[in-house]
Image (tube, rainbow, N blue to C red; front, side):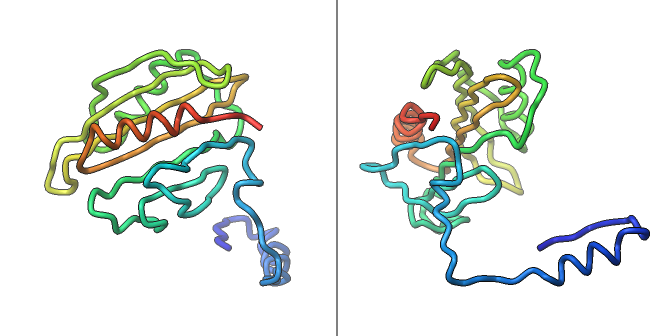
Length: 174
């Protein structure tokens, strides 16, 4: 539990509440049941790694961050709430290009499971801080919300891109 607050008038009540939290190790939560979508990773090199805030993460070795040689991973999730998106294409491109040193190369309109959005392939040049890498992103928009899927790799771009596209196209809303 992370708590960060600056409300002296309620702080004692919040801390008192936090101190009542109890971990029940017998409760098992299936992360796949907690999200409102599915994807298929069977017959790919990816396996489930972790879940966090409406997001599922996959990697080659089931670890996040991955220890695999090409550092490839795939994440899928949804926005945490309503988002005002007036220009979906620009929103999707900006989201990719906000990542350090990435430039969108291919931007295509796409429809998956009846949702329209954009499929983007972007590349990040090598810097002192980061190695060269490729990112594949799909954003699907609906009623003030979006789903986002992103795969990244440092090597084997063509092979990974083919896998990323196959996983993205398997996306279904529950």
